[in-house]
Length: 94
Image 1: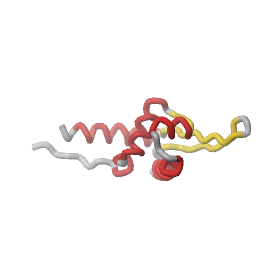
Image 2: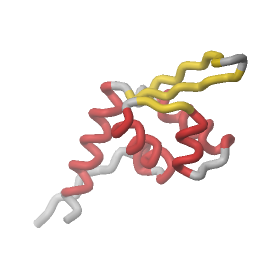
Image 3: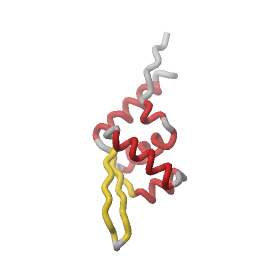
Image 4: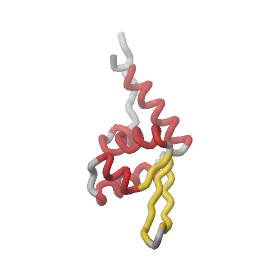
């Protein structure tokens, strides 16, 4: 009998999983690119990024570029590890 592993509730939310998938591939991205890639609203994306940051899965750096705000998001080693564990846990469901 197959034993199902618990799925990380932080990553199990659709938008957070989409963001992490993008960041695992790219390592980092700016807020606008993530917003466009996920078709999320700015408000919802901000809330979900805050949850990922609080979990230690991403770091968020705010600065300015040509007098415009620039928010960069980068996956952390902890976030990468959590994502890999999540994928492995999913495999136990097959």
